[in-house]
Image (cartoon, rainbow, N blue to C red; front, top):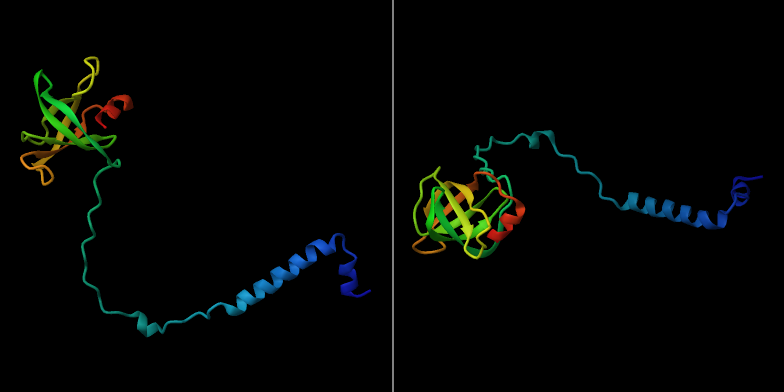
Length: 161
């Protein structure tokens, strides 16, 4: 008995043999049609020294910023919340906020904020100023980047937009 006759005697040969033939033919055609590898000359690999370029500094932010609608907030000193000023939340993250304020604050100053539309039972949130610069987006305002002193619950963070 020959090899072909032995294969013909295998169970379910009419089902798997055409698939096996297809895979063998397709694999062979792929192998024949692939581009041949190009080998580089070893002398071409030696290049002139490149000037060192300083890598772009990595963003120091640990959490992603969320842009959204601006939310108006009351801004006050932690010990004097009777006559708060106004500001707007420009963007927010889980670690802090970027505010547009009408007053300049120094780095390290702790402020308390609360959304204007919030009910009286909503607590004030303490934030620390990380940077303060003249706003390019809103004339007459300062752009103030702040970090939460103690991260508020997510339900409170949602009130800031």
